[in-house]
Amino acid sequence: MKNWDDLKFCHALYRHGTMSDAAKVLKTNVATVSRRLHRLSEEVGEPLFIKEGNRWAVTETGAELAQIAERFNAQIARSNANGRETDLQVQIRISCAMQLLRCGIVDGLAAFFDRNPLARFRFDTRKCSLALNECDIRLSFEEPNEGRIVRRLFKSLEIVPACGKRHLERLEGWVNVLLSDRDSPPVRQLRAHFGSPPKVEIEGFNAARTIIRSCPLVAPLARSVVDLDAELTEVPGVGPLASLPVWLSYHESRRRDPAVRLAVQFLEQAMRPEEIGQGCGALEVRPQ
Image 1 (cartoon, helix red, strand yellow):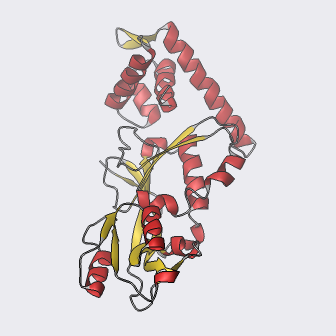
Image 2: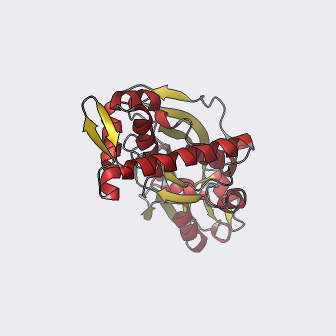
Image 3: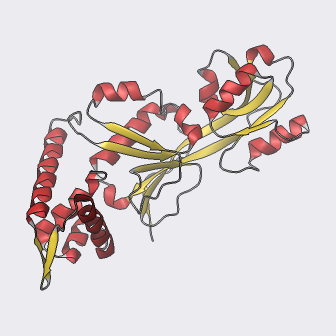
């Protein structure tokens, strides 16, 4: 099953009998319930419910899936009661900019799997839709504006000019790390400093880091990336280039979802919560 989260829609209709009641329980709308159940029916290859008057009668397959969801919910409750979530077999789907993967996310996986050995991750650098359930969590440099979402100004990344230590005395140009904007403050500052366009344009801090290790070029990198690499140094005289906001968001119907809870905990630990910028906002729901 590609999206175990669809099971809760099956369970809600099984328990309540109508799309409208299921939608109320799930704090969503009838169209979403219908769409998710249709997708699940297509995936299993047979109908899960049959319309009978004003209510929906469950099929044998639908009842089996609803009971699986019920057992899963009971497992979550037991894990919560024990103060642990290590028994949860969930896939955590995170949509995030390529640049953010090297800011603690990749390095934090080993410690996470020690605590949650049955969990799985899927990272997608495309901008996935929360409303269409394409991901559980999204990290982005742009402020989220999609539907009913919970959003949080999660972190501020300080961007500094960096180069390989062995090239510090003979820098010959710069690399444009494609962030949220091709004409962002780091781009304007480095263009002004060198008086020329970038020699390389590339996505991802890790790729840029590899380039400046071997070439006498400067790249705008997160300070946390530079500090963890013994071969890199901040270029003096250019100054901090920018402070980029990082937004964390998820759909408001997923507030109690174990995958979302685990994802937020992982990101808070992996991306160094002590570095979260001053004035970062609390979670809030963005209305439709």
